[in-house]
Length: 443
Image (cartoon, rainbow, N blue to C red; front, side, top):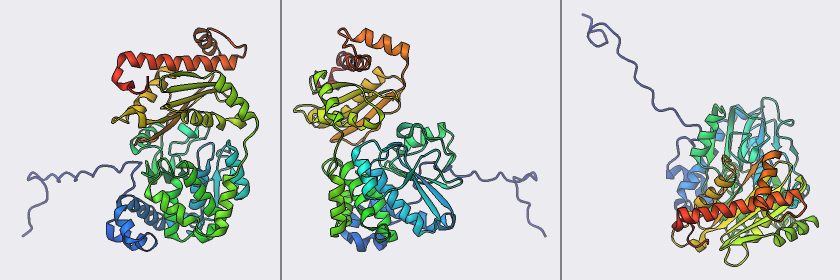
C-alpha cells in the first residue's frame, strides 16, 4: 500500500523552503575558527600573538584560503589591480604583494592600474622599485579579473573618480571605507558581485594586511627586496611613521619586512625624496592668507597644477602641526575642480572624540553640499583625514567669491579659495549657535 502523497492533504505539493538571506556584496564570507588560524599563522607570528589578534588574522586566513580555492579561476588568466586614481605607497605596496600572490597561483599577466603619481615620493618609489603601471581605463587587460587594493568598489567614485566602472570584482582589500558604505554605493552603481571582499579592515595600512597574506603564500622571496621595501613604505607612510593609527599587525609586518640589509637600504632611499621648489611658494601663499578661529585653521592656496596636487594635503598636515590646532583645512583650485584637504586631531576634544568626524562632515556638507568625497578613519583617536572635490561652475564660482571675499587679491583662483575658506568658517559659526556642545574645544 502506498503511503500518503506529499502535500497538505488536498493533493497540492508543499511549498518550497525559503532560501536563506542573500550574501551581501561586501562580505568576507565564512570565517575560520582559531585552530586553523593558529595552524597557518602560529609559526610566523607566534601563538600568543595569533590568539591576541585572532579577529584580524582570521580575516587574513579567509583571504588566503579564498584565493587558494579560486586558483582555477586565476590560472592562465589575466588580472587588473586597481588602486586609487593617484597611486600612493600603501596602494603600490599592496598591489605588488597581490601581484606576487596572483602570479604564484598561476596568473599569466597582471597589471597595476594607476591614473597618476602625484606626490614626489610616489614618483621616487615607482623609479627605485621598478613599478610598472598602466592607465586604469586604457591599460586594462581585456577580460581580466578585477581586483582593488587600498580603494573599494565602485570604480568611478570617491578616490577612483575618472575610472570606467566594472560590474564584477574578484578581490578587494581596503582599510578606508566601511562595509555598509561599499555595499550601498556598489548597489547604486550596478556592481553585481565581489567574490572576495575585505573592506573596512581594522589596520593602519592595507599593505600590512596584504603582507600577512603574502607571508602565508610564501611570496616575500618572489617579490624581492624592492617589493618588500615597497610594502614596508606603504605601512610607514599610511601610519605616519608608525605613530598614528598603527596596529600590532602594522608593527609586526614592518619589522619582518625590513630584516635584511638590502631591503632596509632600499627603504632608506625611498624615504629620502625631494619636493619641487614650487611647493614652498604654495606654502607661503597659504600662510599669508590663512584664516583661523579657535583651534581651526583654514589655508586658501589658489591655483595648483595637477602635477603638484599633493601639496594640498601636505599643507593641511602642516596646519595640524601648529600648537593647539585640532582641525587643519587646505583649499585649492585645480584642473579637476575646487579641492579641499582635511586633517584633524581629536585629542583636544575631551572624552567624545567622535565629534571631530561630525564637525568635519557638517562643514563639508554646508559648503559643498552633496559631495561624498570625505574619506576618513572612523575610530578616533586620534587622526581624521579626508577631503572633498567639486567640479567648477563658472557662474557659481564668480558669485561665490564675490559674495564672500571683501578684498579681492586680483587673482580669481585665490579669491575663490578665500571665499571657500570664509564659507567653511561661516558653517563653523552656524554650528556653534545650533549645537554649542558639538564644537566644544574647537572654538
